[in-house]
Image (cartoon, rainbow, N blue to C red; front, side, top):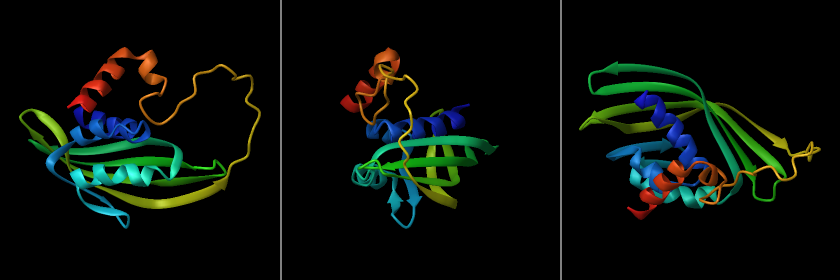
Length: 167
């Protein structure tokens, strides 16, 4: 469950632009490979992400299936993922279908990413077609950042984000 939590916490951190949370998911000597855009230390990856994420008005990352192998305090995982990105002006969507391939280590009882890479299996790009909102006026609308409604509805998440960002 701890390994599954890492994958879903990563998706949440990316989509909510919670870079402080993201940094806690990697060991201090962790590495991230999102080649050809970034490959290097996890600390560098977290520092690079705000510039890259500034290209998108919204993102939605999800994990579809997972496979883990565990050997003591080391583990490996393949997590099938879909990463949806909407352009700043809202006219196009880019959807990446692929897999996160991870190496994990448990240190002092805590599992974190040691190495993380993304394998792109295929991608698609679509024009955004404005559709009927089906009476959704007044429904909470998601957004990147700390003003996402999740933090209003879930006070524990709001407190956790504040604590991570204060550290």
